[in-house]
Image 1 (cartoon, one colour):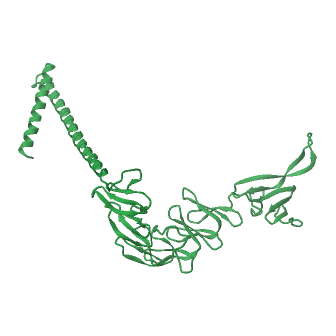
Image 2 (cartoon, one colour; image 1 turned 180 degrees about the horizontal axis):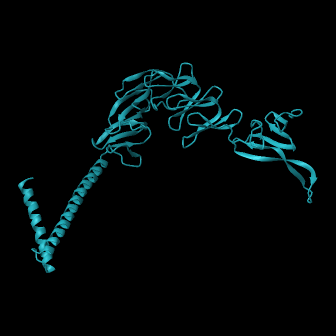
Length: 384
């Protein structure tokens, strides 16, 4: 600390001490008394804190004013357009988002660093490289400097994920690193069933030579062979798959099969504890997240079935009685027969079930109707 600074602080200290003594004298206390010394210490402490607060406020006000002046000077420059089209990408970098006339502006450099931008796409995992298009080709600029890192030279390009980005050169897809080096050769074809080519837990969707879809690792090798017509990433770390008959299955985050492609519908619940499926025969089932069957037949509703009697009540209404069986309904509104002890007698293959007697049921479906007994056996001819 310089001598001038020491002199200033010493003067401030003497001033605070004199003020404390003056206040003590006002109340009739002498500085050499115990109470006077306590009062002096309290006053001196409060005065120091107040002085510190004033200094901090002054410094903060100066910094804020300097920032305002900087922003004002920046906005007065002809190359900077300050309006609702602007979006701040980082502290120093602004994206002027106007179709086919966008640009990147660096507040630090006071100039536009990238011009003629059609659109940009930021990484979803915090990568500093941003993909941009000039309307013809695509490249990457740095989110924090605004400078182009990889020139716009690709026919198509996607965001960086887990350190790699998919690009298209000569009509083929490959992957580059942050320096623009092709680390996975561009030998893959693009698929209309893949929206983006991003790595998740080291796996990325890709189309094989046979036209089917699989998952590659970061070496470009097939972690999951291309044998599916459709793969979609759902929940956290799970891949929903579909075969050529549009039956659905599920893979885990490493590409291992949890459930094969044999279900009419499939989804993972929000808690990611259970997998809900519907078989091709409309049976709702529940598996745990490891693929173990928890509920072999999940019902949406169970109802009693009544058949008409040859009797009428006092109001002339035909009376009814409960049949031997119940009917259950699945979530897609198909019905099946069930015994009263809760055992399914038939698959839920019917659009409606009604009782015609105590142990006979008219079950209607897409192929017409059939009469079943309470064992599920057909009785008589089918009805069209």
